[in-house]
Image (cartoon, rainbow, N blue to C red; front, side, top):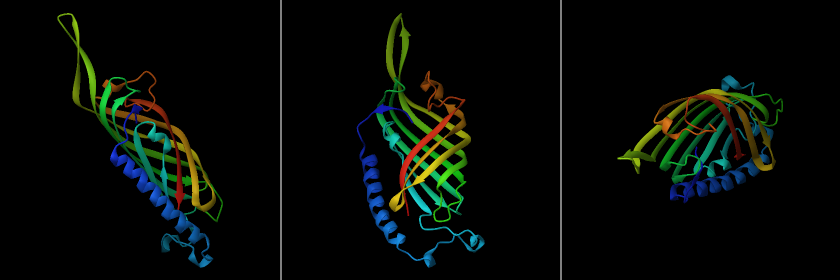
Length: 230
């Protein structure tokens, strides 16, 4: 995603409000489940009867740093055993001006990531707690306008080029830590490395730092989220 000055769009504001409403509802459900008896223990399927999964095998997160980049990023995770879960991350960004890529204007960005996680935790009363490792696979796309300059009879003329598009496919590995608090509230942090393979007009949005850019390279992959298990 890219850093931007932007006016919050109605779609993004609505998603934030919806997330807060869901959190309130799931918090009430979680409190109720905490009072459940042992007979309420959940199982994934008959094939996994030996892997008892306690309350809280589903989780929804919001990624707060995405707002700085002019995007709304949320994720959903489901536990299939005490040590294995799958997380899906999705984001949408929109803005009229970018500070990170100074010549990018009027952009819309999309992001989707898949993380099949393995947790090392031996805690038998909760799923997805503690240290974990995971391969990661993502795809991102950005449509944007860009200010360009041409020379006509020795005079620099600036104009806005439209219908630019860049995309990137990434694959790599991450390691992270997930901390669980009261009422199913949790925090999740991960760090790793990925290979970023780009196509389209990505050369028009290159940066000197190479952080979260669209050009071909091996780069760091990090994330932080807050959420609720239910």
